[in-house]
Image (cartoon, rainbow, N blue to C red; front, side):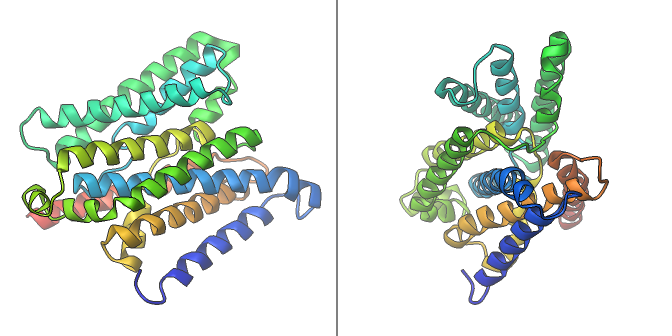
Length: 311
């Protein structure tokens, strides 16, 4: 990591945590801080870290600056699987729940990737369009299931919007553990990710099999995303924005970028969740909505910058 840049990220993380613990109309009552805000802050940190890590992995493995779990359909696949599990009565503490959510995330990601490759050459535009199509279909499926469920599904709408409620300690521990393992495994392969950034031919000459590594990085990104969705629902653009922001501090090497993206994503989502609790108090805006309001303009700026660069 570039010299003297790590303290900036850690300071941002500490500020976001303090903001999250202090924000809210109830003030600093110890019971509120300890029993409500602290678990919610920990959930935001875990979800943000998982999405930030997944975004960095997708962008590195695909050499595509527009890649993000939300845009590729990964989050939608995980959400659809989670909703189906909820409607079937499968608890979030069950290993079957996490396995189903991972399968949904993995399947949706590879469907988007396969659709984008049908044209022969994987382009930024094709990948975005394929991801949007897959996400739209899965979102419609989720809405259909929730509409059919009526009263049973009312409580799930906040989950689908990316609302961070204090979760059961077991769910928080399982999700955080999965994300930590994904981060550790990704760090073991940071050299392969850097080699893939040079192009497939260069990667082969460096002893890296791009196809095999891509499957590995996709799997890690999907696992981190599914753990984040299981804990916090559908929250977009964290994985898109965070790698771009922290890359200015760390440079392009995955050795520094991957942990920085996890730290940056944790700070970004904790701040977004706290902002959603305070901006329209006593009403509460889900963190997923706050991130969409901030991330959609950022995404449009990236599209404009890419189009301008090709002109």
